[in-house]
Image (tube, rainbow over all chains, first blue to last red; front, top):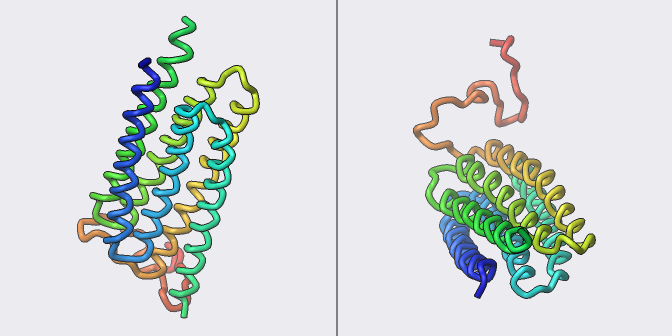
Length: 90
Length: 125
């Protein structure tokens, strides 16, 4: 077992813990923007998980998935922000 | 030299990125209001993605397509994360989410009209 395998295993554990913590905030978050922030963090961590997995599995096709997920996460966050502003206006 | 380039640098970068992402999640879990949580999540999660993408680029340094895709991820995330955070912060303020009670300074207080969403300038007061 070389150095990179150990680092990838440790990083996977840390990222899994990060998803769990962000999900707790997603469930608890007192206001809707809190939940949107937590969801945004979860998609960022998912992009990180794909990068780590593509190192571990020697499969670079996951990078395309990471690019698309980053794009969709940005669109989703902006759409949520627009929705919240429109809802606050009336 | 070869071993250092292909093993230690990606390993260190992956660990650094994962640590920053865990730190972002702890911040989102522990900090008291929306804007502080956003401050924790956007900056360190963006930096974490950057570290991991650079690790991937160094690990596949001989394949140009992988390096370019890693750079595209970095450029894209570093451009979109501040915009998304700005929009969420503005939406939260307009919705009337209350800041933490220990907040020292709110420069929009008294100048922002929730009915018309207009801002008075400093000279009007």
